[in-house]
Image (tube, rainbow, N blue to C red; front, side, top):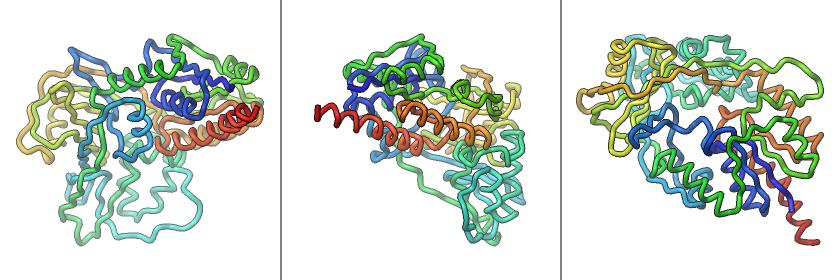
Length: 398
């Protein structure tokens, strides 16, 4: 029977463990360097309230990731996921409901040819009136040349749903219905706790405080185990045959703040600032244990008074009455690597092919966390099936 060793206890690693069990594996080990599953996405908790500084919603009932978690006992609540955008326009910042920026530009015929490789390739598909403000926004967020950024960064920047309206209708209201989705009933910490219990019931061995080196993982493949690397792939470049400096990553400086608030608005609500002006890039309003909280992402540190003024200004168009911001309960500075470089994606692809050939399909790399989540999990599931299903069939025949 094939043994499976999964490195990384975030959501990807947990889903990989569930999938390995579904495919027939029974000797499964899930390892993580932290003291509990959930990886770096686990929010801090203060007096029972989750202080989140990232995304926290899942898809509708047919979402395969949500289905995999629900099948193992994780409870979700169906909600409308409300979204708003602050977009640039010739007359100033413009607030609209719906996901993605709204820009006044004539519709263009979609270009034919190969899929875009860089963020610049994506922007070139838009008319100049839309491409220029989008480029300014991306530069404001990342501070690098956009031809260095891989096209898979578009969803992380909120650019996968750009909305163009004819110039003659540039001032018209743009209203979008909320997207149907779900949030974990017991919060993100409750989700990972439920998943941990489900894994234990399945007989998955969970090893915490476990630092696994790439060479140790490769040795496990030599011992006929299937290894799924669901952690940061950067250390894996130490396994490359041709030694070279590790690829450059694009670090986005993020200052996060969480406020208690009193706000009358449809929740949960995410508002993105696409103007490339100010400090606030995104706001997420959610409830935890009956409290309303506002999670604020900024491109740099900002003082309390100007931060509060900008948050109130950006949320005002989406609130039914003026909002009151109470105490700031979390401040966090970090560098986020959500937008991979073209070099990093290309070299990781070559490394994956090398490891696949060297270990005969028994070393699977989940990929960059910034890539489209659904596509990443679907690709991981397919590769695990190719490795595990034949082994299960051979075992059954024997």
